[in-house]
Length: 170
Image (cartoon, rainbow, N blue to C red; front, side, top):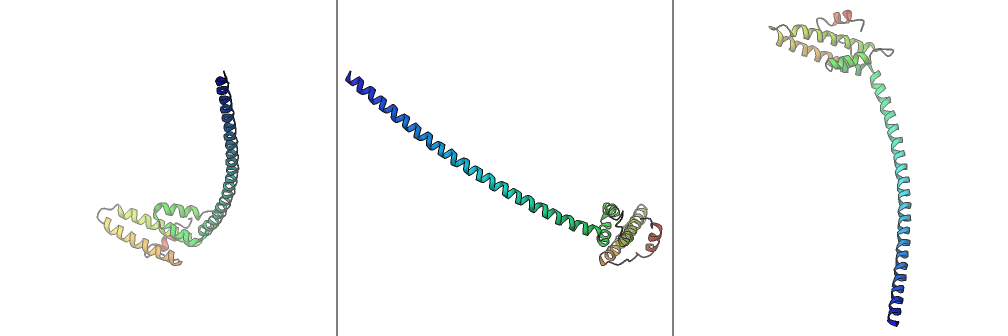
């Protein structure tokens, strides 16, 4: 029986050692979890701060861009140049030039481009002079664009003054 008692004592000692080891492991895991939670809170705080800084920077850049865009759109020269970029650009320029900030310079080139588009379309559908019409339209477009870029109101030859008169409501 003494062997059984000794064996029982050994088992109890082993069980006690196991309990003590488990308790130490649980304490270590608790410390690790506490450290991880502290680091997670610190990381979240840093991330929140950086996100706030990023949002402030983004808002500042947007405001700068918005101010620059308003300045560009209010400039008649830019609107005149936009009017030369296909029919869609002409429509955009027409919309940009409407309202209270209407620029006479932009209106001049919007009228010019409408005339050039009409000449190109009408002459372009006539089969015999089709190629000549497209070349003439390209030359008129380039002359008008050069005038717009140069900041001078230069009517195209032949019909430029008539375009200004015919389309004066634009």
